[in-house]
Image (cartoon, rainbow over all chains, first blue to last red; front, top):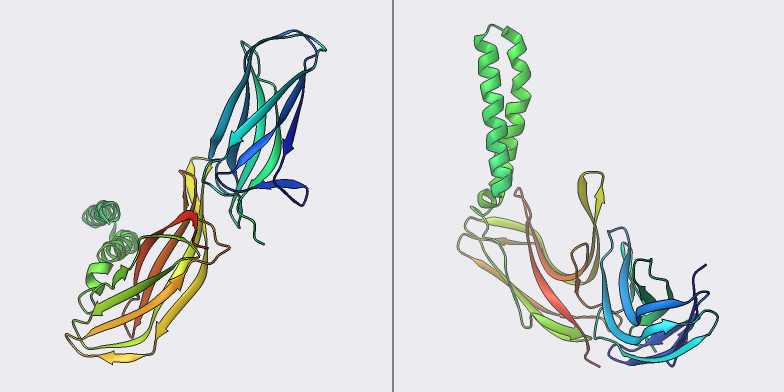
Length: 130
Length: 189
């Protein structure tokens, strides 16, 4: 079993169930982690990251990152962290014929000698079309 | 051009050598098998020099843009000039603002790139005859649409903007020239 990771995103506009944020804007929220066993975390990171989808091979990058915690998490004890990330100027979210640019907020637990558990929530980083 | 020319010379040399050796060894009509390969080599060499050959009659179009870096919603002007070294009948000359998606991927051992282009705007000139030494000169203005995407240039995926000039001269290959514009992730409005 993996720890349960829940990402909450506040602010932005709702666009079809996904939160939209302006480039260079701030994005806030919280991460709740409920481990099913004791965990020695090198780091708990939250990132705003982008990647491409479509015909081509994947390009990806990290727009903003915050180190939320370093230390031990106890089994079945929920840990709650707030985050605040400043989004970069580019690349904007994009949907085209062969190239899509997808943004997400990702939380990951950096563990020693183990696969890092992670969870993510999609966001849109682009200016409003209104 | 260097790669094509190098490959073409190698291809042609090998084809000629094979055909001559086949002929000398008494292969007779069997040596004719090499002729299509020699022709392919000649076509590749002509292809490598095609631009140079084409410019004997018409000089490549020269593009000037007022701004190389533009913002979303911003206007910029484009001028293009072309000199004619021999009398030429221009059927059409078009200046286009192009948005191009390019996606590069690995397929087995091959690397492939697929592109999709959208002509955002254009202006064109009517058919006209130019005498030797004459110059054609056209200008216009383009705007990067307000809902457009900025330039995105990564190793496998690219979103690029170009000004492209395409000149169609009667009885002569099209002269096509592109000029890349950097569209910044900033808005003008």
